[in-house]
Every structure is written in structure tokens, then in C-alpha cells.
Amino acid sequence: MDFSLSPEIDALREKTRTFISETVLPLEADPESYDAHENIRTDLLDEIRGKARAAGLWAPQAPTARGGMGLPVTGWAALYEEANRSIFGPACLNCAAPDDGNINLLSKVATEAQKDRWLQPIIDGKVRSAFAMTEPHPGSGSDPGMMLTRAEKTDSGWVVNGRKWFITGAEAAQHFLLIARTSDDPRRGLSAFLYDANQPGQRIERRIPIMGPEEHGGHCEIVYEGLEIPEENLLMTLGDGLKATQIRLGPARLTHCMRWLGLAKRAMEIAAEYTSRREGFGIRLADRESVQIKMGELAHEISIGRLLVMHAAWKLDQGDFARKEISSAKVHVANTLHKAVDTAIQLNGARGYSKDTVLEWIYRYARQARLVDGADEVHKMVLARSYAAEGMDYWRWGV
Image (cartoon, rainbow, N blue to C red; front, side, top):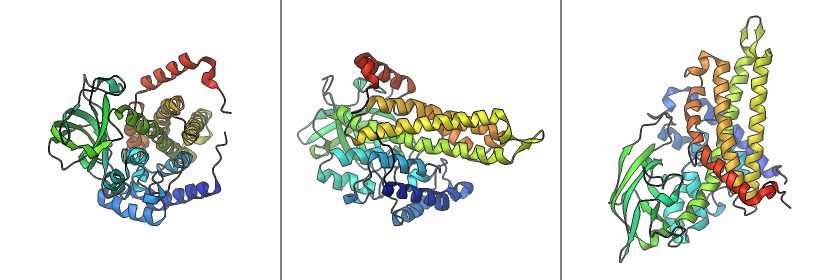
């Protein structure tokens, strides 16, 4: 397993680092850069996206034939980490959730006609998208088998009734990927559909208030009351909803980790800068053994996270589902991000708790990492079940 980057990808990584440092990072210090939900203002985002596209740093995960960079998953890991050195970075490069995961899924499984209609505008940055799967109790959350939203067959297609919630980006999304029940078959009872925000029969009930900060479009509750979906907007084939979900969520979980590593490194960077110049009781904070231990622990945990992410990315590039590798990375990196920013705030003292740095922004954002795309406990169950099935082969070497 060779995780070294090719010269071409490393050059793109360096180019991304320079773009983020010179074009994106300075925006964070200006209160006028933010929208009402503490993300980058949309008109400013459009401006920076134009610069990213001109620099050749647009949609690293999308096929080159459709205007993306066409990188392997290991290449995503290198670029996404650099992009999220800034809290605004991934959105500027069109590699932020949920569009990122939707681009990847549609690129893999949609028909050419569906790609033209639903995928291309997302890659082009003309529309945003959302993935509607999670439901209120007693509907599906981490267990898709509990899904209650139903799509009933009609002469011309399907009609959908039900409710979804915590759908990321829904208020700003134009294109939606919907998972709904089409039968009671335990393995092939779910199907995937595409619909447009302008279609009647569905509405956003509310934008759910969260700790924040928020992605563009927030996290919404959606009600479906007779949403009609034509047959050509069935994604994959009837009963492939669970398969579509697995194809999307595995890599999407890993790209979260790639971005979170960038945020963890940024938190450590802010801590290092401050402790190098702050003195107390006649000594720099950076020279105190207690501070050095904290910083050493963070460097250690981030390095482990990068190896876990790159191993999972490498396996995806080999055609493997990398289920347990992705779960390992998800658990470790989510907790590392939280530890990194918590430590950075502690070392910055009151400054870290204030809005003079982005640490408090990252701290609030980091708490969701242990919940989104599967809580820690769910992924640990995946790991336990993998070990129960594989025994000592759980740690087998790739040959």
C-alpha cells in the first residue's frame, strides 16, 4: 500500500493550499463575508467560485468530461484537507456536503439523460442539491429498514407521501435525491428518486434550528403529500434504494473526514501561533511541557486520522467498499476534530472562546461530526460485526 501522492496530485495540493491561503482565508476575518447562518455570503461565494474555476481547482470529484478534475479518491483526500484549512474552502471548490456526495453518486449510477438533467447543473454550480433519507421517529435514521415514506406506483410514475427531517441544504437546494419505500421486501424495499424543488406535493415544513454554524440551506423538515415523480426519475432500478444509499454514504463519510482533518490542522495551527508568542510567569506557553504534550498528542492523533483516511481512500480506488475502514476513519477523525479544537480553545484561553478567531465556529461545527452520517456508536457496531465475521482476518494485509 503506497500512499505517496503522484507529482501531479501533489502539485494540485500545493496549488490548493496557495489558493486557500491567498484568496479564501482572508475572508474569514471580515464580518461582512458571512450570511445570517454564519456561512460565506452567497454572492461572495459565487465570486470566489469563479476564481477557483479559473485556477483549475473546481469539483475535484467530478468527471473531467463534465467539467470536474476527475481525481481518484486518494486525490480527493489531499485536496479536501487543504480546502478545509478555511471554513469556507470546500464550498468555494464545490467539494462541500451534500453536493459532494450527490455528485459522486449521480456520476456513478445515473443514466446519461439523468446526468444531463440532474448532475450537470450541480457540477456547474448553477444549483444546489440535497439527499432526503432521514425521518423523524419512528421512521428511519441510521437504520434505513425503518423507513416510512412511501412511493406508490401509478400509471405514469410514482406518488410519494411521508416526512423527512434534518435534510442538509434543503432550503437552498433545487435538485433532490429521495429515498422512499416501494415495497416491504427487507433488502429491496427501498428505491431512489430524483425531483425538483419546484414540483408540487412537497414542502419545507421548517428549517430546524441547530447549534450551528450551518451549511447553505440549513437542515430542514420536509413533508410529502402527493409528490408525483415520473418513471424516468427513478434512479437505478426499482428496489435499488439501499444500494444507492450505500454507494453514496460510504465515500461521503470519508470526504467528511478529509475535510475535518483540514479543520483539525487549522485549530492546531491557531494554537501553535498563539502559544509561540504568549508568555506567562516568565516563559512562553510553547515552552511549557504541559503545552508541548497537548500539541504532541494532537499531531499524533491527526497523523493517525490521515493514515486511516488514506487507507480507506486507497481501498475505494481499488474497487473495494472499504466499509470497516471508512467506519474506523469516521470514528477516529470525528473525535480528533473535537479534541483538536477543544485543545486549541483551551490554549488560547478567553481569546479562543471569543469570535476573534474561528475556533468557536469550528468547535460548534465539530460537535455534529460524531453524529452526522452515522453516530460513533453505529460505526463501532459495524466494526464489531466485521470482527465477529472475519476474526483474525479483520487485520489481513492487502496482497
